[in-house]
Length: 255
Image 1: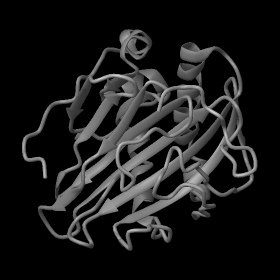
Image 2 (image 1 turned 180 degrees about the vertical axis):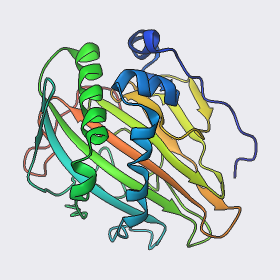
Image 3 (image 1 turned 90 degrees about the vertical axis):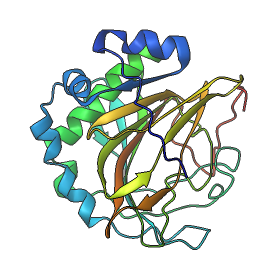
């Protein structure tokens, strides 16, 4: 278990795209997220209570009870957010050796959360950023609300280990962190030796990942007090449609 905490290497708003192009990932502070999304932090804070109403993840193959989540899917056309009928989350085994190859039907994100302007604003901001990075086009988006708790004495944010997601851009927002230690973020070159480690602690700070170029993981958490947990919002954007067990994506990028 990690005991030393390294500060996240946050970049300024004007440097986000250049940093992603240079190294394949970028960390943004909460004020930078606010600037990028044109949302004040008070509006983002209104989303936080919904993380206390996440049902258990019934698909954990390690038998754990430490993860709760909800899931939603969208298609982004410019600033227009199209809600997609509720669908299973599916990943190939190439990207998720633990839980890949299976349809996972998670409970949908609550209607009150989906209807909140801050939720839509975050999706629009990520779509615009992804289009700057990869070229303007429709984006197929999956949004996951996660709570990792310490019910089992230890909680695993990424039980599948270091991985890629098989998408174009991944955004990992730290929403809340209460009464835990650990949960260190680690990012590595997908085709090289370099990596970085740090701990996200600021609510609404975010790690952005060019998924073809880097792999990532978060270390387990342990309780410092009863009820300790770590809440995140993970949003993925993909150009070629949703990953689907009928039409798996064939990647030519290095694994």
